Every structure is written in structure tokens, then in C-alpha cells.
Length: 194
Image 1: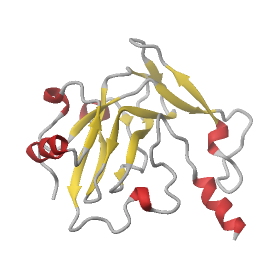
Image 2 (image 1 turned 180 degrees about the vertical axis):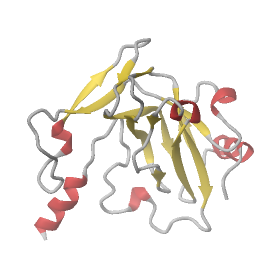
Image 3 (image 1 turned 90 degrees about the horizontal axis):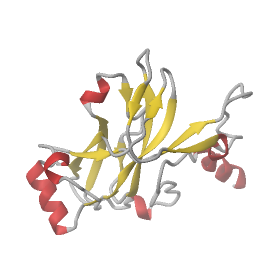
Image 4 (image 1 turned 30 degrees about the vertical axis):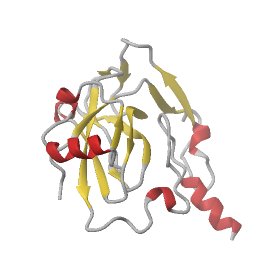
């Protein structure tokens, strides 16, 4: 069951669901989702001189550089470019809700993709949402920190998760702040330790 705006507001009022800060509930709370806004930090791959990225060998965190955008200034996402962005809002899910992040259709119509594959948010997750931004248009698109960039919808589970994200061993992104690079290499490090 997808939560309606009425249920989203109820969950927020009761503190079961946390989305902070919501500056303009009238604008951000939609009929069955909440619009989240773009933060001002981006992670960009430094790939000059690299033939490929090997997640068993490379630490993606070390292959990325942070770009901070001043208030009121745009970040230009070039055609074919991929960067990690973040939401302004921190989201905290209860153990009985799962969430899905999708791009806003208005940005999709400009060729902006908000997530490559990771639109799913586990029950018990807490943190800012990392966005996998890419531009499939043929011209750069200006993105402004503070603009509504994506929407998050919520699905009620049949029962609370037995092991929510914050209790799961190996949860690599719990309490993340800002755009967070892939930590896939940690999975391979753990295999080598065994």
C-alpha cells in the first residue's frame, strides 16, 4: 500500500516518519509523495588517465572530488556526465515503511535522471539521500541547489522488518550526510578477510 498525502502527514505529525527540514509542506507534500530538494554538494569522478574502475581493487571514495556550489549559483550537468548529489532533507524511515525515490517528471523531460539504479530506501534507513545524477540530453542542464529534484513515496510493509537497515550488519550508508560515494569495495575487503 502506498501512503497518501493524508497518511504521510499523519506519519510526520506522529514522528513515525521524519523528513527534515520540510520548508514548504504545501509545495513539497504531493498526493502520494514528498518532493525533496537538491543540496549544494556534488561528487565527481576524477577519471583522467584511468582505463576503468575495478570495485574489487579501487576505493571509489578516493576516485571522486567534491564540488560545492554557492547559494544561487547553478551546477551545470553536461551531456553524458554522471555525478552524485544529495538531498537537503534527511529522511528517517520506521521499521514498517520502505521508500522509493524517483525523479520529477519536469526534470525527466529535460533529460535529467535522478538515480541510475538505487531508488529503493530500506526500512530503518536514516540519512540524506544520495542522488545518482546524469544528463541524457544533448546540452548541459543547469541544476540549482534548493530546487525540488526528486520525489519520495512510501510503501507500508505487511509487518515491521525483522532486521531494519540500522540493525543490519554491513549497512554501509546508514546516517550518511552529503553525497556518498559507493562503498562496494568494502564487500570485497570483507571476503578477503575470511
